[in-house]
Picture (spheres, rainbow, N blue to C red):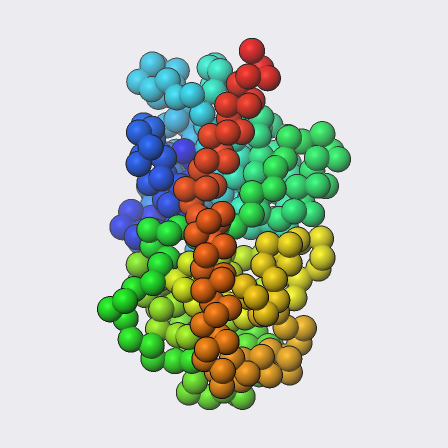
Length: 306
């Protein structure tokens, strides 16, 4: 696995996938894309990338220290290097790119994807566009790591609505309308983040790029009602979750406030929708289901290539 990490980091999407792979008996070698081998520090500090981890991987393969079957590259579309090319490796690994942070990083990830055997992206329109370009792209929508995002029965609900969206136009309006019933928490990771979501009855989401986000799935995995902005039909999120049955969608700030107030005032209805959402995520959108998908795609590629 090639991805950026800070030592001491409690959880990230790549770490969740890595731990699931290890649970299944795979041997995983991870190589860091962050400079100075990474260290957990001020969350506001910039992440500095380096090719050191990439070259460490190349040398480990060349000298026979490791002989991996798969290269899994997981990044948000920032890192690239001329050495990230099969010509430098000299083995027959399956190259798999997890192109996170699409659509916002679809251009940079798209350049990388042309070098990989398989590319998975959480954004359906991006996957379709890349396929038209001849890239073997698959829609791999977001998920919840159910080992971290789950109901924590020892947590007490402190607020009606919680989010980690930050200060945006819609969230500012919601904050003004709901006051102390609403809490915006930032820079929480791992179990701390899962526990934070458990401290609200509702998880509120407002996308930045009209994209499907992990928060939708993580909130549901915690057993909470998710209220999120309505996305373009091409995202296909409404094919996954039905308004008023598994989730609640809003169109603008006024509708968001109306829906939040409705579900705050109707706890039985809120719990019914939350239970439905939780069931759907646990059935189809956990880290285990996504690793099932990765394993299936890798085996399909090998079968096609032999």
